Length: 364
Ligand code: PHE
Image 1 (tube, rainbow, N blue to C red):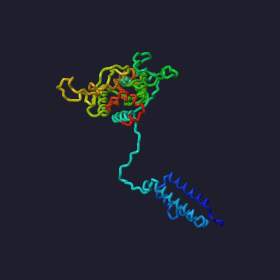
Image 2: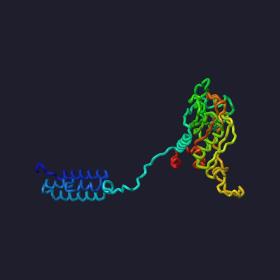
Image 3: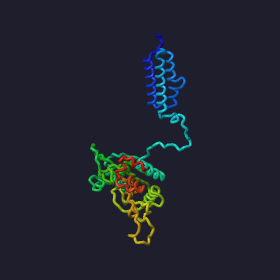
Image 4: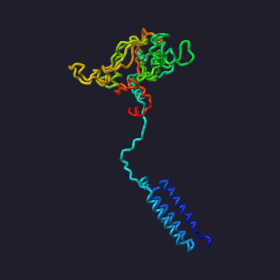
């Protein structure tokens, strides 16, 4: 046997190598055209192999020929069966004018959207946003707001107390129950120099949780102090906010109430922007009320939103202002409620807002 002669066993070995190479390429999902070039073209792997025929013993030629024919058929069939064509990727015609596929993007949480909008509305009339601690001294949350220790008015704010050392003047540390803690803090920040036009938006905490309350929620608080500030300025500001946030024609209404830190104190309502404050969806004013179509959203034409009033002289004093010279107004209420009202949402469980459920959040 000549030195460079090839046996049938060696040939079979080479055939096996080519086949496993093809198998690997099929798994890799190479395109048909590529496979044809690699295996079946003039300089492809099969023709390279076929050259072997000149190196086999004359007696093996017949078998070699058969084996080569078999493998060629096998390779051809496997390639034809493969599903991937290069037109799937490389040479595919692309319509560059077709609208693109929108990538999935997130968006701001509805409560953040509301805070952003509230901030902008007040900034347009000269308020500036401030931020104060959400874990604060009793002094700022209650005492400086005309609520001495053990005053029964404190009961209304179901307070979380922090297990921390008590300060002689500042008292205990609490989770802020309302954003009113920003009032005296803002007066101190501006060194009791008017004018003050603050909008304070922050998290608040109260020890109650049910379908309409979450233990953590947000409030926004307005505070204006200067010479000659009166209740008309407050009413004008509320009307301005109502129109800006809820749309043209929305009005505010104030009713007498009680807070320790304002005098007089008021409760604020906004007219329903669905029935425009009438309580009815039709305008048949002549028809008896029980036959008219009632607004299901507000039931009465108005939505109660929060508290307001003229800053109590004791609070001005606590912030270093002379109440004989300066007056001010304040208001404050929940961001969540303000927002759901705007969307016309009767959310039966406010906890949904903080559930992190995308099916809910994606709607805003
Ligand atoms: N802080 C009050 C509350 O949480 C609201 C309020 C703010 C009332 C400012 C009057 C003035 O209910």
